[in-house]
Length: 549
Ligand code: ATP
Ligand code: MG
Ligand code: MG
Image (cartoon, rainbow, N blue to C red; front, side):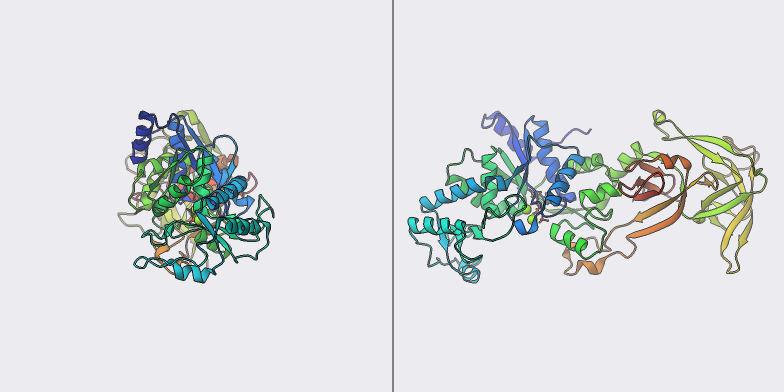
Protein backbone atom coordinates (compact mmCIF):
# COMPACT_ATOMS: atom_id res chain seq x y z
CA UNK A 1 0.00 0.00 0.00
CA UNK A 2 1.04 3.57 -0.61
CA UNK A 3 2.82 5.81 1.87
CA UNK A 4 0.24 8.03 3.51
CA UNK A 5 0.89 11.68 2.91
CA UNK A 6 0.38 13.89 5.90
CA UNK A 7 -2.46 16.37 5.95
CA UNK A 8 -3.64 19.17 8.18
CA UNK A 9 -5.70 16.80 10.32
CA UNK A 10 -2.78 14.48 10.93
CA UNK A 11 -0.68 17.51 11.83
CA UNK A 12 -3.18 18.54 14.48
CA UNK A 13 -3.12 15.01 15.87
CA UNK A 14 0.67 14.86 15.80
CA UNK A 15 0.78 18.08 17.81
CA UNK A 16 -1.81 16.87 20.31
CA UNK A 17 0.15 13.69 20.91
CA UNK A 18 3.47 15.54 21.13
CA UNK A 19 2.11 18.07 23.62
CA UNK A 20 0.56 15.34 25.75
CA UNK A 21 -2.97 16.69 25.24
CA UNK A 22 -3.93 13.15 24.25
CA UNK A 23 -2.27 9.80 24.77
CA UNK A 24 -4.48 8.03 22.30
CA UNK A 25 -6.54 9.05 19.30
CA UNK A 26 -10.25 8.25 19.27
CA UNK A 27 -12.33 9.10 16.21
CA UNK A 28 -15.81 8.14 15.10
CA UNK A 29 -17.77 7.73 11.91
CA UNK A 30 -21.29 9.06 12.54
CA UNK A 31 -23.70 8.17 9.73
CA UNK A 32 -27.39 8.77 9.91
CA UNK A 33 -29.15 5.48 9.03
CA UNK A 34 -31.41 7.16 6.49
CA UNK A 35 -29.93 5.68 3.32
CA UNK A 36 -26.98 3.75 1.91
CA UNK A 37 -23.48 5.17 2.15
CA UNK A 38 -22.09 6.77 -0.98
CA UNK A 39 -18.67 7.44 -2.42
CA UNK A 40 -18.39 10.62 -0.37
CA UNK A 41 -18.75 8.64 2.81
CA UNK A 42 -15.80 6.50 1.71
CA UNK A 43 -13.61 9.52 2.24
CA UNK A 44 -14.90 10.08 5.75
CA UNK A 45 -14.53 6.36 6.52
CA UNK A 46 -10.99 6.17 5.19
CA UNK A 47 -10.11 9.28 7.12
CA UNK A 48 -11.63 8.34 10.48
CA UNK A 49 -10.82 4.64 10.44
CA UNK A 50 -7.49 5.24 8.68
CA UNK A 51 -6.33 7.70 11.32
CA UNK A 52 -7.38 5.39 14.15
CA UNK A 53 -5.48 2.54 12.54
CA UNK A 54 -2.31 4.50 11.81
CA UNK A 55 -2.15 6.01 15.30
CA UNK A 56 -3.12 2.75 17.03
CA UNK A 57 -6.25 4.39 18.36
CA UNK A 58 -9.94 3.61 18.04
CA UNK A 59 -12.70 4.54 15.66
CA UNK A 60 -16.29 4.12 16.76
CA UNK A 61 -19.20 3.52 14.47
CA UNK A 62 -21.99 5.66 15.81
CA UNK A 63 -25.37 5.85 14.20
CA UNK A 64 -26.73 9.36 14.46
CA UNK A 65 -30.28 8.15 14.84
CA UNK A 66 -32.24 11.17 16.01
CA UNK A 67 -34.68 11.43 13.05
CA UNK A 68 -36.94 8.44 13.62
CA UNK A 69 -39.19 8.97 10.59
CA UNK A 70 -36.39 8.56 8.06
CA UNK A 71 -34.35 5.82 9.63
CA UNK A 72 -34.42 2.05 9.56
CA UNK A 73 -32.53 -1.07 10.54
CA UNK A 74 -32.06 -1.97 6.87
CA UNK A 75 -30.14 1.24 6.34
CA UNK A 76 -28.18 0.69 9.51
CA UNK A 77 -27.21 -2.81 8.35
CA UNK A 78 -26.20 -1.62 4.90
CA UNK A 79 -23.92 0.96 6.50
CA UNK A 80 -22.10 -1.63 8.61
CA UNK A 81 -21.78 -3.87 5.57
CA UNK A 82 -20.27 -1.06 3.51
CA UNK A 83 -17.72 -0.17 6.17
CA UNK A 84 -16.57 -3.77 6.47
CA UNK A 85 -16.47 -4.15 2.72
CA UNK A 86 -14.16 -1.14 2.54
CA UNK A 87 -11.86 -3.05 4.87
CA UNK A 88 -12.45 -1.32 8.19
CA UNK A 89 -13.91 -2.34 11.49
CA UNK A 90 -15.21 -0.25 14.32
CA UNK A 91 -14.00 -0.43 17.88
CA UNK A 92 -16.12 -2.56 20.21
CA UNK A 93 -19.88 -2.50 19.85
CA UNK A 94 -21.78 -0.34 17.44
CA UNK A 95 -22.86 2.91 19.10
CA UNK A 96 -26.14 4.73 18.72
CA UNK A 97 -27.01 8.29 19.61
CA UNK A 98 -30.31 6.82 20.80
CA UNK A 99 -28.40 4.96 23.53
CA UNK A 100 -27.71 8.39 25.00
CA UNK A 101 -31.29 9.70 24.96
CA UNK A 102 -31.57 9.57 28.74
CA UNK A 103 -28.22 11.29 29.28
CA UNK A 104 -28.99 13.86 26.62
CA UNK A 105 -32.24 14.57 28.40
CA UNK A 106 -30.48 15.02 31.75
CA UNK A 107 -27.92 17.39 30.21
CA UNK A 108 -30.83 19.43 28.88
CA UNK A 109 -32.19 19.68 32.42
CA UNK A 110 -28.73 20.81 33.48
CA UNK A 111 -28.84 23.61 30.91
CA UNK A 112 -32.29 24.61 32.15
CA UNK A 113 -31.06 24.62 35.76
CA UNK A 114 -28.25 26.94 34.74
CA UNK A 115 -30.70 29.27 33.03
CA UNK A 116 -29.22 28.32 29.66
CA UNK A 117 -32.25 26.71 28.04
CA UNK A 118 -35.93 27.56 27.88
CA UNK A 119 -39.17 26.13 26.61
CA UNK A 120 -40.59 28.19 23.77
CA UNK A 121 -44.30 27.99 22.87
CA UNK A 122 -43.90 30.06 19.70
CA UNK A 123 -45.00 28.52 16.43
CA UNK A 124 -42.30 27.57 13.92
CA UNK A 125 -43.35 30.56 11.79
CA UNK A 126 -43.01 32.94 14.71
CA UNK A 127 -39.61 31.56 15.56
CA UNK A 128 -38.45 31.91 11.98
CA UNK A 129 -39.63 35.51 11.88
CA UNK A 130 -37.79 36.28 15.13
CA UNK A 131 -34.56 34.66 14.02
CA UNK A 132 -33.50 37.59 11.85
CA UNK A 133 -31.04 37.11 9.02
CA UNK A 134 -27.47 37.86 8.04
CA UNK A 135 -27.97 41.61 8.28
CA UNK A 136 -30.68 41.81 10.96
CA UNK A 137 -30.21 40.59 14.52
CA UNK A 138 -32.93 38.30 15.86
CA UNK A 139 -35.56 39.23 18.43
CA UNK A 140 -36.11 37.69 21.80
CA UNK A 141 -38.97 35.28 22.07
CA UNK A 142 -41.61 36.33 24.62
CA UNK A 143 -40.87 33.00 26.37
CA UNK A 144 -37.12 33.60 26.66
CA UNK A 145 -37.25 34.85 30.23
CA UNK A 146 -39.28 32.03 31.69
CA UNK A 147 -38.03 31.00 35.11
CA UNK A 148 -36.02 27.86 35.73
CA UNK A 149 -38.83 26.12 37.62
CA UNK A 150 -41.40 26.77 34.91
CA UNK A 151 -38.97 25.61 32.21
CA UNK A 152 -38.15 22.43 34.12
CA UNK A 153 -41.80 21.70 34.69
CA UNK A 154 -42.69 22.27 31.04
CA UNK A 155 -39.75 20.26 29.74
CA UNK A 156 -40.66 17.32 31.99
CA UNK A 157 -44.22 17.51 30.75
CA UNK A 158 -42.98 17.64 27.16
CA UNK A 159 -41.23 14.35 27.86
CA UNK A 160 -44.31 12.95 29.58
CA UNK A 161 -46.36 13.54 26.45
CA UNK A 162 -48.65 16.25 27.78
CA UNK A 163 -48.34 18.50 24.72
CA UNK A 164 -49.11 17.93 21.06
CA UNK A 165 -46.38 17.46 18.45
CA UNK A 166 -44.73 20.70 17.44
CA UNK A 167 -46.45 22.79 20.10
CA UNK A 168 -43.31 23.57 22.10
CA UNK A 169 -39.56 23.25 21.79
CA UNK A 170 -36.60 23.51 24.10
CA UNK A 171 -34.10 26.14 22.98
CA UNK A 172 -30.58 26.91 24.10
CA UNK A 173 -30.34 30.46 25.42
CA UNK A 174 -27.30 31.85 23.66
CA UNK A 175 -27.37 35.08 21.69
CA UNK A 176 -30.14 36.31 19.39
CA UNK A 177 -27.81 39.00 18.04
CA UNK A 178 -24.97 36.64 17.14
CA UNK A 179 -23.71 37.07 13.58
CA UNK A 180 -23.70 33.26 13.51
CA UNK A 181 -27.34 32.30 13.08
CA UNK A 182 -26.66 28.85 14.57
CA UNK A 183 -26.16 30.60 17.90
CA UNK A 184 -29.50 32.44 17.87
CA UNK A 185 -31.11 30.27 20.50
CA UNK A 186 -31.12 27.05 18.48
CA UNK A 187 -33.81 24.46 19.10
CA UNK A 188 -32.34 21.48 20.94
CA UNK A 189 -35.49 19.39 21.55
CA UNK A 190 -38.74 18.99 19.67
CA UNK A 191 -41.93 17.04 20.35
CA UNK A 192 -42.49 14.30 17.80
CA UNK A 193 -44.61 11.22 18.32
CA UNK A 194 -42.66 9.01 15.96
CA UNK A 195 -41.85 5.35 16.41
CA UNK A 196 -38.10 4.93 16.65
CA UNK A 197 -36.55 1.78 15.17
CA UNK A 198 -34.57 1.22 18.39
CA UNK A 199 -36.32 3.01 21.24
CA UNK A 200 -39.82 2.32 19.97
CA UNK A 201 -42.35 4.64 21.60
CA UNK A 202 -40.31 5.35 24.72
CA UNK A 203 -39.78 8.95 23.65
CA UNK A 204 -42.01 11.62 22.22
CA UNK A 205 -39.32 14.28 22.36
CA UNK A 206 -36.17 13.97 20.26
CA UNK A 207 -32.91 15.91 20.54
CA UNK A 208 -31.63 17.88 17.53
CA UNK A 209 -28.52 16.88 15.65
CA UNK A 210 -26.20 19.68 16.79
CA UNK A 211 -27.04 19.11 20.42
CA UNK A 212 -26.78 15.34 20.16
CA UNK A 213 -23.61 15.11 18.18
CA UNK A 214 -21.23 16.97 20.46
CA UNK A 215 -22.52 15.23 23.59
CA UNK A 216 -22.30 11.80 21.95
CA UNK A 217 -18.70 12.59 20.99
CA UNK A 218 -17.89 13.65 24.53
CA UNK A 219 -19.54 10.60 26.11
CA UNK A 220 -17.47 8.32 23.90
CA UNK A 221 -14.22 10.10 24.66
CA UNK A 222 -13.71 11.14 21.06
CA UNK A 223 -10.54 13.20 20.75
CA UNK A 224 -10.94 14.50 17.20
CA UNK A 225 -14.42 14.88 15.75
CA UNK A 226 -13.82 15.07 12.02
CA UNK A 227 -16.68 16.31 9.87
CA UNK A 228 -17.37 18.09 6.62
CA UNK A 229 -17.04 21.82 6.00
CA UNK A 230 -20.74 22.63 6.23
CA UNK A 231 -20.41 22.11 9.98
CA UNK A 232 -17.76 24.80 10.36
CA UNK A 233 -20.44 27.35 11.31
CA UNK A 234 -21.85 24.88 13.80
CA UNK A 235 -18.58 24.51 15.68
CA UNK A 236 -19.32 27.43 18.04
CA UNK A 237 -22.54 25.67 19.02
CA UNK A 238 -20.71 22.35 19.42
CA UNK A 239 -18.30 24.09 21.78
CA UNK A 240 -20.99 26.10 23.58
CA UNK A 241 -22.96 23.00 24.51
CA UNK A 242 -19.92 21.15 25.82
CA UNK A 243 -18.65 24.20 27.68
CA UNK A 244 -21.92 24.52 29.56
CA UNK A 245 -22.62 21.02 30.78
CA UNK A 246 -20.64 18.58 32.89
CA UNK A 247 -19.38 16.22 30.17
CA UNK A 248 -16.26 14.10 30.71
CA UNK A 249 -14.23 15.71 27.91
CA UNK A 250 -14.34 18.25 25.12
CA UNK A 251 -13.49 16.81 21.69
CA UNK A 252 -12.08 19.05 18.98
CA UNK A 253 -14.20 19.39 15.88
CA UNK A 254 -12.16 19.57 12.67
CA UNK A 255 -13.72 20.17 9.27
CA UNK A 256 -12.60 19.04 5.82
CA UNK A 257 -13.98 19.43 2.30
CA UNK A 258 -16.62 16.98 1.10
CA UNK A 259 -15.73 14.62 -1.66
CA UNK A 260 -17.57 15.42 -4.85
CA UNK A 261 -17.11 13.55 -8.08
CA UNK A 262 -18.20 14.43 -11.59
CA UNK A 263 -21.44 12.74 -12.57
CA UNK A 264 -22.20 11.43 -9.10
CA UNK A 265 -24.89 12.65 -6.74
CA UNK A 266 -23.76 12.56 -3.14
CA UNK A 267 -26.95 13.46 -1.37
CA UNK A 268 -28.90 10.65 0.22
CA UNK A 269 -32.13 12.54 -0.35
CA UNK A 270 -31.55 12.64 -4.11
CA UNK A 271 -30.30 9.06 -4.22
CA UNK A 272 -33.42 7.99 -2.35
CA UNK A 273 -35.46 9.85 -4.93
CA UNK A 274 -33.78 7.87 -7.75
CA UNK A 275 -34.61 4.64 -5.94
CA UNK A 276 -38.20 5.58 -5.09
CA UNK A 277 -38.96 6.78 -8.60
CA UNK A 278 -37.66 3.54 -10.12
CA UNK A 279 -34.92 5.20 -12.19
CA UNK A 280 -32.57 2.57 -10.79
CA UNK A 281 -33.25 -0.93 -9.50
CA UNK A 282 -32.33 -0.07 -5.91
CA UNK A 283 -29.72 1.53 -3.69
CA UNK A 284 -27.21 -1.03 -4.92
CA UNK A 285 -27.90 -0.65 -8.64
CA UNK A 286 -24.45 -0.79 -10.28
CA UNK A 287 -24.97 2.74 -11.63
CA UNK A 288 -25.49 4.19 -8.18
CA UNK A 289 -22.63 6.06 -6.48
CA UNK A 290 -23.39 4.16 -3.29
CA UNK A 291 -20.68 1.90 -1.94
CA UNK A 292 -22.98 -1.07 -2.47
CA UNK A 293 -23.63 0.11 -6.03
CA UNK A 294 -19.93 0.49 -6.74
CA UNK A 295 -19.41 -2.93 -5.23
CA UNK A 296 -21.93 -4.50 -7.58
CA UNK A 297 -20.35 -2.61 -10.41
CA UNK A 298 -17.08 -4.41 -9.63
CA UNK A 299 -15.14 -1.53 -8.13
CA UNK A 300 -12.67 -2.88 -5.58
CA UNK A 301 -12.46 -1.64 -2.00
CA UNK A 302 -8.73 -1.29 -2.47
CA UNK A 303 -9.12 1.10 -5.38
CA UNK A 304 -11.51 3.24 -3.35
CA UNK A 305 -9.06 3.41 -0.47
CA UNK A 306 -6.20 4.36 -2.80
CA UNK A 307 -8.43 6.97 -4.42
CA UNK A 308 -9.35 8.57 -1.09
CA UNK A 309 -5.69 8.60 -0.11
CA UNK A 310 -4.60 10.20 -3.37
CA UNK A 311 -7.19 12.95 -3.43
CA UNK A 312 -6.13 13.89 0.08
CA UNK A 313 -7.80 16.02 2.68
CA UNK A 314 -8.30 19.76 2.19
CA UNK A 315 -10.39 22.68 3.33
CA UNK A 316 -11.28 23.57 -0.25
CA UNK A 317 -14.45 22.27 -1.86
CA UNK A 318 -13.85 20.97 -5.36
CA UNK A 319 -15.35 18.58 -7.88
CA UNK A 320 -13.00 15.78 -8.79
CA UNK A 321 -12.77 14.34 -12.27
CA UNK A 322 -14.29 10.90 -12.57
CA UNK A 323 -11.10 9.86 -14.28
CA UNK A 324 -9.25 10.09 -10.99
CA UNK A 325 -11.36 7.30 -9.57
CA UNK A 326 -11.32 5.35 -12.82
CA UNK A 327 -7.53 5.37 -12.91
CA UNK A 328 -7.41 3.78 -9.45
CA UNK A 329 -9.97 1.17 -10.46
CA UNK A 330 -8.13 0.26 -13.66
CA UNK A 331 -4.77 0.04 -11.91
CA UNK A 332 -6.14 -2.40 -9.37
CA UNK A 333 -8.06 -4.51 -11.86
CA UNK A 334 -5.22 -4.58 -14.36
CA UNK A 335 -2.98 -6.03 -11.68
CA UNK A 336 -5.44 -8.44 -10.16
CA UNK A 337 -8.24 -9.42 -12.53
CA UNK A 338 -7.89 -12.68 -14.41
CA UNK A 339 -8.10 -12.47 -18.18
CA UNK A 340 -10.83 -14.17 -20.15
CA UNK A 341 -12.48 -13.97 -23.55
CA UNK A 342 -16.09 -12.99 -23.98
CA UNK A 343 -17.77 -12.30 -27.29
CA UNK A 344 -20.50 -9.77 -26.65
CA UNK A 345 -22.04 -9.68 -30.15
CA UNK A 346 -21.38 -13.13 -31.53
CA UNK A 347 -20.84 -13.66 -35.25
CA UNK A 348 -20.29 -17.29 -36.20
CA UNK A 349 -17.49 -18.27 -38.51
CA UNK A 350 -17.27 -21.82 -39.86
CA UNK A 351 -13.69 -22.85 -40.58
CA UNK A 352 -14.09 -25.18 -43.52
CA UNK A 353 -10.67 -26.84 -43.42
CA UNK A 354 -10.95 -27.70 -39.69
CA UNK A 355 -12.39 -31.20 -39.30
CA UNK A 356 -15.78 -31.21 -37.61
CA UNK A 357 -14.75 -33.70 -34.94
CA UNK A 358 -11.40 -32.07 -34.12
CA UNK A 359 -11.18 -30.23 -30.78
CA UNK A 360 -7.81 -28.76 -29.81
CA UNK A 361 -7.31 -27.93 -26.20
CA UNK A 362 -5.28 -24.74 -25.96
CA UNK A 363 -4.00 -22.98 -22.93
CA UNK A 364 -3.63 -19.33 -22.04
CA UNK A 365 -2.35 -17.61 -18.90
CA UNK A 366 -5.00 -16.31 -16.51
CA UNK A 367 -2.86 -13.21 -16.09
CA UNK A 368 0.11 -12.23 -18.26
CA UNK A 369 2.19 -11.01 -15.28
CA UNK A 370 0.98 -13.50 -12.71
CA UNK A 371 1.90 -17.08 -13.56
CA UNK A 372 0.77 -18.08 -10.06
CA UNK A 373 -2.81 -17.57 -11.24
CA UNK A 374 -2.34 -20.54 -13.56
CA UNK A 375 -3.76 -21.20 -16.98
CA UNK A 376 -7.19 -21.43 -18.54
CA UNK A 377 -8.30 -23.92 -21.14
CA UNK A 378 -9.54 -22.79 -24.52
CA UNK A 379 -11.03 -25.05 -27.15
CA UNK A 380 -10.41 -24.57 -30.84
CA UNK A 381 -13.21 -26.02 -32.96
CA UNK A 382 -14.55 -25.83 -36.49
CA UNK A 383 -17.21 -23.29 -35.53
CA UNK A 384 -16.25 -20.27 -33.50
CA UNK A 385 -17.63 -16.84 -32.65
CA UNK A 386 -15.92 -13.53 -33.08
CA UNK A 387 -17.46 -10.14 -32.33
CA UNK A 388 -19.55 -8.51 -35.04
CA UNK A 389 -17.52 -5.36 -34.54
CA UNK A 390 -14.36 -7.21 -35.48
CA UNK A 391 -15.56 -7.93 -39.00
CA UNK A 392 -16.19 -5.71 -42.02
CA UNK A 393 -16.85 -6.82 -45.53
CA UNK A 394 -14.56 -4.10 -46.80
CA UNK A 395 -11.88 -2.71 -44.54
CA UNK A 396 -9.58 0.25 -44.73
CA UNK A 397 -6.02 0.75 -43.60
CA UNK A 398 -7.10 1.64 -40.05
CA UNK A 399 -9.25 -1.44 -39.65
CA UNK A 400 -6.84 -4.09 -38.41
CA UNK A 401 -9.37 -6.81 -37.89
CA UNK A 402 -11.10 -9.30 -40.16
CA UNK A 403 -12.30 -8.40 -43.64
CA UNK A 404 -13.52 -10.52 -46.54
CA UNK A 405 -10.49 -12.20 -48.02
CA UNK A 406 -8.31 -11.04 -45.14
CA UNK A 407 -6.60 -12.70 -42.22
CA UNK A 408 -6.56 -12.13 -38.50
CA UNK A 409 -5.06 -13.91 -35.52
CA UNK A 410 -7.38 -15.44 -32.98
CA UNK A 411 -5.96 -14.52 -29.62
CA UNK A 412 -4.05 -17.44 -28.09
CA UNK A 413 -4.84 -19.52 -31.19
CA UNK A 414 -4.38 -19.73 -34.96
CA UNK A 415 -4.49 -17.29 -37.85
CA UNK A 416 -7.74 -17.56 -39.79
CA UNK A 417 -9.01 -16.14 -43.05
CA UNK A 418 -12.53 -15.08 -44.06
CA UNK A 419 -13.47 -16.49 -47.44
CA UNK A 420 -17.19 -15.90 -47.70
CA UNK A 421 -19.98 -13.85 -46.14
CA UNK A 422 -23.44 -15.38 -45.68
CA UNK A 423 -26.39 -12.97 -45.54
CA UNK A 424 -30.09 -13.35 -44.93
CA UNK A 425 -32.79 -12.02 -47.22
CA UNK A 426 -32.67 -8.64 -45.52
CA UNK A 427 -29.01 -8.40 -46.35
CA UNK A 428 -27.72 -8.80 -42.79
CA UNK A 429 -24.56 -10.75 -42.25
CA UNK A 430 -25.51 -13.95 -40.43
CA UNK A 431 -22.39 -16.07 -40.71
CA UNK A 432 -18.90 -16.20 -42.16
CA UNK A 433 -17.06 -19.04 -43.83
CA UNK A 434 -13.32 -19.27 -43.63
CA UNK A 435 -10.24 -21.33 -43.09
CA UNK A 436 -7.39 -21.85 -40.62
CA UNK A 437 -3.70 -21.63 -41.37
CA UNK A 438 -2.76 -24.82 -39.50
CA UNK A 439 0.86 -23.77 -39.21
CA UNK A 440 0.31 -20.63 -37.12
CA UNK A 441 -0.20 -21.80 -33.56
CA UNK A 442 2.33 -19.84 -31.51
CA UNK A 443 4.20 -18.71 -34.63
CA UNK A 444 3.91 -16.23 -37.42
CA UNK A 445 2.58 -17.33 -40.80
CA UNK A 446 5.07 -17.93 -43.60
CA UNK A 447 5.86 -15.05 -45.88
CA UNK A 448 3.33 -12.47 -44.65
CA UNK A 449 2.43 -10.34 -41.64
CA UNK A 450 -0.92 -10.60 -39.90
CA UNK A 451 -1.39 -7.52 -37.76
CA UNK A 452 -4.83 -7.88 -36.22
CA UNK A 453 -5.66 -9.98 -33.19
CA UNK A 454 -9.26 -10.62 -32.16
CA UNK A 455 -10.82 -12.43 -29.24
CA UNK A 456 -13.07 -15.41 -29.92
CA UNK A 457 -14.74 -18.41 -28.37
CA UNK A 458 -15.61 -21.87 -29.60
CA UNK A 459 -19.25 -22.19 -30.63
CA UNK A 460 -19.64 -25.59 -29.00
CA UNK A 461 -17.31 -25.03 -26.04
CA UNK A 462 -18.44 -21.62 -24.89
CA UNK A 463 -21.20 -20.67 -22.46
CA UNK A 464 -24.08 -18.28 -22.90
CA UNK A 465 -23.99 -15.25 -20.64
CA UNK A 466 -25.86 -12.08 -19.91
CA UNK A 467 -23.57 -9.09 -19.97
CA UNK A 468 -24.66 -5.70 -18.67
CA UNK A 469 -22.88 -2.65 -19.95
CA UNK A 470 -23.12 0.25 -17.55
CA UNK A 471 -22.38 3.84 -18.27
CA UNK A 472 -22.80 7.03 -16.28
CA UNK A 473 -26.30 7.65 -14.99
CA UNK A 474 -26.30 11.29 -16.06
CA UNK A 475 -25.33 13.09 -19.23
CA UNK A 476 -24.28 16.11 -17.16
CA UNK A 477 -21.12 16.15 -15.10
CA UNK A 478 -22.74 18.21 -12.33
CA UNK A 479 -26.25 16.83 -12.05
CA UNK A 480 -26.60 18.25 -8.53
CA UNK A 481 -26.63 21.75 -10.00
CA UNK A 482 -29.79 21.02 -12.00
CA UNK A 483 -33.20 21.74 -10.52
CA UNK A 484 -34.48 18.68 -12.32
CA UNK A 485 -31.57 16.26 -12.33
CA UNK A 486 -33.80 13.53 -13.68
CA UNK A 487 -34.01 15.49 -16.93
CA UNK A 488 -30.33 14.68 -17.46
CA UNK A 489 -30.57 10.91 -17.17
CA UNK A 490 -28.45 9.02 -19.67
CA UNK A 491 -30.83 6.79 -21.69
CA UNK A 492 -27.90 4.45 -22.42
CA UNK A 493 -26.70 4.04 -18.85
CA UNK A 494 -27.59 0.35 -19.07
CA UNK A 495 -27.37 -1.87 -22.13
CA UNK A 496 -28.21 -5.51 -21.52
CA UNK A 497 -26.69 -8.10 -23.82
CA UNK A 498 -28.65 -11.31 -23.38
CA UNK A 499 -26.75 -13.58 -25.72
CA UNK A 500 -23.07 -13.09 -25.20
CA UNK A 501 -20.78 -16.13 -25.40
CA UNK A 502 -17.96 -16.57 -22.95
CA UNK A 503 -15.04 -18.97 -22.65
CA UNK A 504 -15.83 -22.08 -20.63
CA UNK A 505 -13.55 -21.19 -17.70
CA UNK A 506 -16.03 -18.48 -16.78
CA UNK A 507 -18.62 -21.09 -15.80
CA UNK A 508 -16.45 -21.49 -12.70
CA UNK A 509 -16.68 -17.80 -11.79
CA UNK A 510 -18.07 -17.05 -8.36
CA UNK A 511 -20.22 -14.02 -7.62
CA UNK A 512 -17.97 -10.96 -7.35
CA UNK A 513 -15.04 -12.56 -9.22
CA UNK A 514 -13.53 -9.90 -11.44
CA UNK A 515 -12.14 -10.32 -14.94
CA UNK A 516 -10.62 -8.46 -17.78
CA UNK A 517 -12.54 -9.56 -20.84
CA UNK A 518 -9.78 -9.13 -23.35
CA UNK A 519 -10.20 -6.13 -25.63
CA UNK A 520 -13.54 -5.29 -23.92
CA UNK A 521 -12.93 -4.06 -20.42
CA UNK A 522 -13.24 -5.11 -16.81
CA UNK A 523 -16.23 -7.11 -15.65
CA UNK A 524 -17.52 -8.63 -12.45
CA UNK A 525 -19.78 -11.64 -11.91
CA UNK A 526 -22.92 -10.12 -10.43
CA UNK A 527 -23.04 -10.43 -6.69
CA UNK A 528 -26.66 -11.55 -6.61
CA UNK A 529 -27.77 -12.76 -10.03
CA UNK A 530 -24.77 -14.69 -11.28
CA UNK A 531 -24.57 -18.46 -10.77
CA UNK A 532 -22.95 -21.44 -12.45
CA UNK A 533 -26.28 -22.05 -14.23
CA UNK A 534 -26.86 -18.48 -15.33
CA UNK A 535 -23.80 -16.38 -15.96
CA UNK A 536 -24.30 -12.65 -15.42
CA UNK A 537 -21.46 -10.16 -15.75
CA UNK A 538 -21.49 -6.42 -15.13
CA UNK A 539 -19.08 -4.12 -16.88
CA UNK A 540 -17.12 -2.22 -14.28
CA UNK A 541 -15.19 -0.01 -16.65
CA UNK A 542 -13.78 -0.06 -20.15
CA UNK A 543 -10.10 -0.53 -20.93
CA UNK A 544 -7.96 2.56 -21.07
CA UNK A 545 -9.57 5.53 -22.82
CA UNK A 546 -6.67 5.55 -25.23
CA UNK A 547 -7.29 1.91 -26.14
CA UNK A 548 -7.41 1.69 -29.92
CA UNK A 549 -9.53 -1.07 -31.37
P1 ATP B 1 -26.76 13.51 3.27
O1 ATP B 1 -26.83 15.00 3.36
O2 ATP B 1 -26.68 12.96 1.92
O3 ATP B 1 -27.78 12.84 4.16
P2 ATP B 1 -24.90 13.41 5.38
O4 ATP B 1 -23.64 14.18 5.35
O5 ATP B 1 -25.99 13.95 6.22
O6 ATP B 1 -25.34 13.15 3.90
P3 ATP B 1 -24.27 11.36 7.19
O7 ATP B 1 -24.84 10.00 7.27
O8 ATP B 1 -24.63 12.32 8.26
O9 ATP B 1 -24.65 11.93 5.78
O10 ATP B 1 -22.70 11.30 7.04
C1 ATP B 1 -21.86 10.60 7.91
C2 ATP B 1 -20.49 11.21 7.85
O11 ATP B 1 -19.98 11.19 6.52
C3 ATP B 1 -20.54 12.65 8.29
O12 ATP B 1 -19.45 12.89 9.16
C4 ATP B 1 -20.38 13.43 7.02
O13 ATP B 1 -19.72 14.63 7.25
C5 ATP B 1 -19.56 12.47 6.14
N1 ATP B 1 -19.85 12.71 4.73
C6 ATP B 1 -21.06 12.73 4.14
N2 ATP B 1 -20.95 13.04 2.84
C7 ATP B 1 -19.63 13.22 2.59
C8 ATP B 1 -18.87 13.56 1.44
N3 ATP B 1 -19.46 13.79 0.26
N4 ATP B 1 -17.53 13.64 1.55
C9 ATP B 1 -16.94 13.40 2.72
N5 ATP B 1 -17.59 13.08 3.85
C10 ATP B 1 -18.92 12.98 3.80
MG1 MG C 1 -28.15 14.07 6.23
MG1 MG D 1 -25.67 14.08 8.56
